[in-house]
Image (cartoon, rainbow, N blue to C red; front, side, top):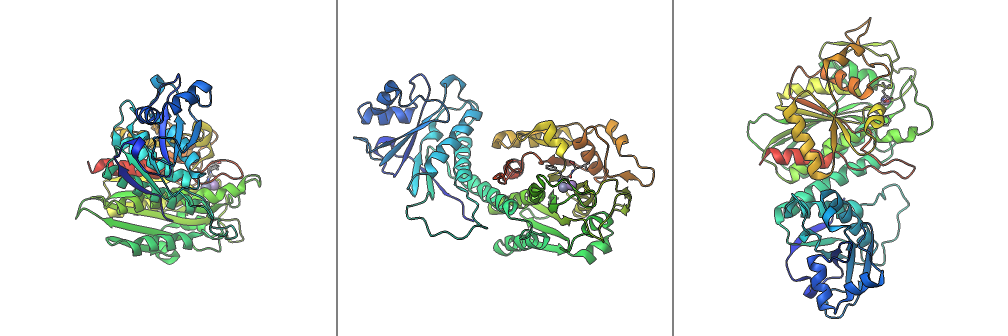
Length: 492
Ligand code: BES
Ligand code: MN
Ligand code: ZN
């Protein structure tokens, strides 16, 4: 899965030879600097568009011009930026994606974008380059793995984007994040008859084989039994696909305490004996997007050779109903020793994560972050735009929220107050696996918190953000950008 190539370029827009030059115009007939130069060289061609009403400058619109006199580029894509006084980071993000969508339909192998020169309040050129580059790669991604192979396209496909006024480091970060995002999208999109626990383990093995400094360990059912992971194994026992606990390590900083990333890897969630309704169940192939996200973030961190130690832990399990499946009222004993009353076998994510969180602590990490498609309640609360962030650590919350804002992979914090813990009481075990009808995202977070022993830990509920809804909805690759930005920020 190769990402677009990003590079930086600095020649003047009107004299740059390229299959396609991208320039921006605001509403009310205001041209961006590059558009002004092209307009001047081409005898007012862009202004004429605005005067005729062929272009409006509204965001989401673009106009393609061919063979402009006095301009070296074969094509000029004139992109609407909206009102100049409202042009901010959010609009830039949208415009970068719109421009990329327009480019991908063209028969060109490369393009030269000047969007990086536009003024965006509070954002530097590194941010503008990275945002534009990530947008371009996001738009260029196509899922093809399970279609009948098509003949190679007869026209060139976009492979390279050049950015003006850009810088190498920002583009290298963009390339690494893009490859993590692509990895996460592809793993998320694959069907569960291919992407089962063994498949995820095989992808982790490829990461380890392709990068020096990375080590992999895969714990099998017997290994997990020896460690006492009765909670994870309880979920796994109804599936013919054996569970895997995948552990990747990156050593980029001697003996420093690692950052630990833990991702929910339910390769398909039927609900188990507490069976889900049929309608929409196919979406539960995406229930491993937490796993895909932390693996993608790990891959990006390794590609960037970040000077940190990192451990990535993925419990990969399938939740199936079966003669051997676990049942409501079963009591499971977790690796931590806490016993758990299963009141609903569909609240399985927390049951595999609790043992993974306990295991993560054997690495004595400085921070633990988990990502999980954990609750429908989080989608009700925050919709498809923000991931739910839960942590008791205010500093960690600020850092993760900032990383999300920086990458437009945003999260919103929900409280983890002790007031909610009472909802998890059980008459038969130390804790129940569901917390009743209120605050489902929070009680799931509270459940996980019982297995963190007061360590620095944050939980990201990505149930709403990991894939786009609908029959053709694809995995988004979130929260890879947030996680990678968080890790990059720790090295500055
Ligand atoms: N994987 C689901 C959560 C989910 C549901 C994510 C819909 C995205 C869309 C999770 O395992 C689950 O089933 N959670 C239950 C918990 C409940 C039984 C307490 C839920 O949210 O309904
Ligand atoms: Mn479930
Ligand atoms: Zn689930």
